[in-house]
Length: 145
Image 1 (cartoon, rainbow, N blue to C red):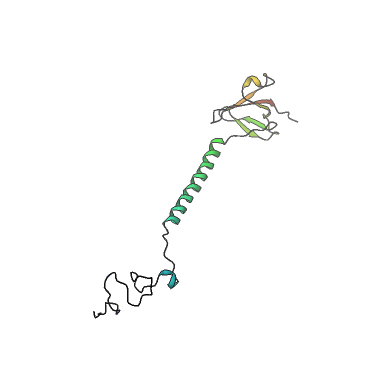
Image 2: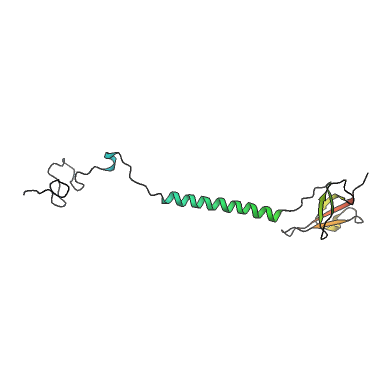
């Protein structure tokens, strides 16, 4: 059987036959092409899992940031500490002010209902929370000097 060169210049071999120069115990199925390990090249990996991971991480970060903004917006309230001063604002709401300001009131205590204020003759303000848990500020007039 005489071999003729194929398009690459090497002699053509019969399909699925071992080359005559193959070492014992190895088949010629792979021919003389070197495996990627022998050429020093790494097989190319798909970047698809990396891209998907980055997109998922970005979405999670965006959701976390949105959650923080929404939570702070809903919990945004004038946090009145006992001893701080307030004044009546526009629509019967308490507005934090300097205690030296005329017409200001000092927060004596914070309660869950009006009946819990120690001095029922003194004014109070109900601070409505979006969470539904209202807060009653028991007040007394700030002493002016």
